[in-house]
Image (tube, rainbow, N blue to C red; front, side, top):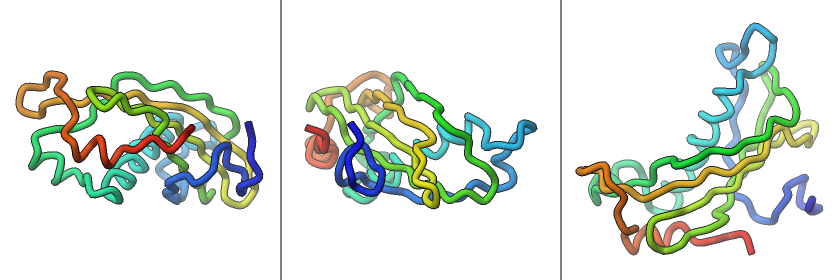
Length: 147
């Protein structure tokens, strides 16, 4: 499954670079698992903004993608000061309610994959909190990038 594209499992990820800060480190002297989830969220929002679906745009449309399920595998530890590349691909979009993002986190300097996972999202009407069909902007913006 590993490609020769700088350690990424798949070609052409959307990438957000983060740095493990002192407050990210727990008593075991490595980045706490909750921080990885925050990095996934930050990458998703950065990608959404890059395709024209910023948080403010979603609020304007009264539609948003909410997490339905998260599956992650922690493969190696990150430590304070590590520069981490958070890669994201759209793995699925049914064009109606659901989108799945695939993630891979790489230590920028060692090339080691520290986490893999995917997050399933469902489109919500922000007024009612109920599932709602994706606006056409979401369908166009969240194009599947994994074959």
